[in-house]
Image (cartoon, rainbow, N blue to C red; front, side, top):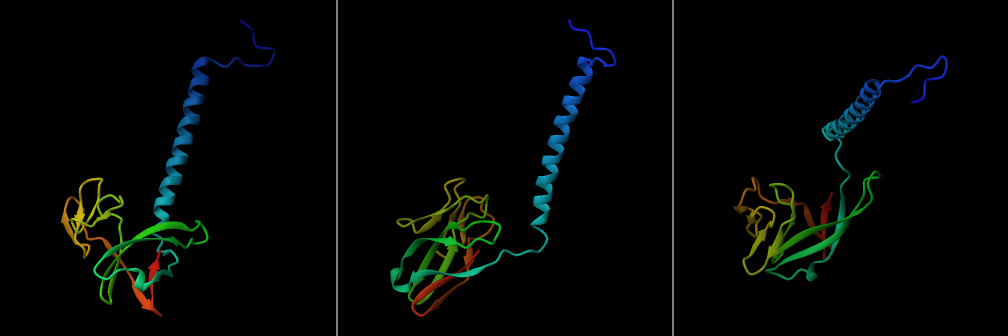
Length: 159
């Protein structure tokens, strides 16, 4: 066992352990504070910048069908562009675009053509072709995105 040099105080095991626990507690508290701050910032009223996105020529969406389309959602300056899936339901010139995110816990629902439903595999929610809840724990219908037909192209207001 080494003795401390002259003028130095020996640190006890109890004191060292206490300092380690304090440091770990401060690290956890600062992490929780950062997460809470990020959570609260979403309520500042700052809306993400939304832009019209061209999904393609209207003729590429068959009449009477539901078609999945992937597009690149524009970034907002803080986040890079990201791929986003939407479903286009076309009945003549009536076009509805759905965000397939399940309103229960945010899983992605998928169109099942034989059954004519949007089905969420996570907890069994199902939505009819108009996006209304027909089964499962989902509390709300699928979100309809704003869409327009311009110059023979289908545009959606992307987030």
